[in-house]
Image (cartoon, rainbow, N blue to C red; front, side, top):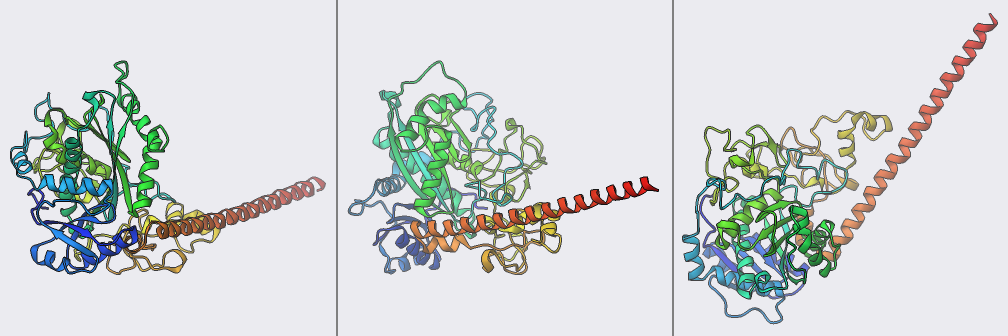
Length: 505
């Protein structure tokens, strides 16, 4: 994994056409030229990782209006708020002041918990953001996890919460700083594994609320809910932690992405300056003693938790044998127990990754064929997940003629057909021999060509098929139960006859 900071080989690309479908088609054409789209703001502003030769080719694509390596003077006509902020953040990151601040960033390279005092480590005491049984999205019958692993496109909602007093408000420069730091941190994260084709698409909101701080409140939820709930309500969502999930689900649908999470930035009092609990991150702008110039690394660290990576610093009470992430990778770089620790963002304020963190994030090439293990097949319901979880039940009700032999909840190998006879992207030979053999609809391909409306129709059709499968299971279960009752009644009737016969003798 790369150990340097975000590269200089990035380009800001302005597209010609509006609309989600046009943006997805443009992203596909750009990536076919060998560039990686790292960030998407609105429908027309992209930031790509592209060497100079590729950048020149991009400039010739019909969907591309302009390609920029330097700051740009103005946003496109009728630019959205997200597009304007994305460009402003790009300009800030290309400034000399920003480059100087990064070269002189506070506490560069220090372990997150080295000092034992201030600044504190991210995450906070008592906050459990990643557990050993983290990965559940493909191990359940329906999709419940909005970020089980980091492959494909991700919607990121950035909510900047202003309060009623000067000390609780963000200036325009601070808003741009927030977006620039997120851009820097997630851009670094995306380029660590180009084969994962990670693109972050943003919905950016500034929300003003009237609640003054309440000194009587304490604890993660009470302090957070004091400003979070009115902020979510003003955006049209439930005034509770449920509203954060509703918001994540909405931007996932609106932006046509595979995954989603939400990041709140505030100056209100919080229990800890940075922590993650799916599907959200909370960050205080001051960033404790690490300072705003380290928001990029702290945010990338917290995003690692969103996708299954655990802490590796010693005060987190980590264990080298505990397993995390989609592939259940041991936390082998835990600094409290390993004898050969290496630099890693999950352990320290550094642009580095150990060999375990990529697997925690879902980046694994188990057969060394140059293609990451495909974890996409569980996005839609497949009855074989049920048969893998309860093999005797499936044999009993006729959904499976043979006991499943593969591990449930993993992706990859086999050549089985998917839903409605569609061969999924996992239908390639030579994959992980311990992987789930089922198929599925290749959503990663669909999202590149379909807009939100079309993708929503596909999702609705898939949900209808899920219901049809479950209705089939229910009918067969009821029929099986009736047969069992009939069989039991026949046995009881036979026992009664035998008893009466015995009595007559």
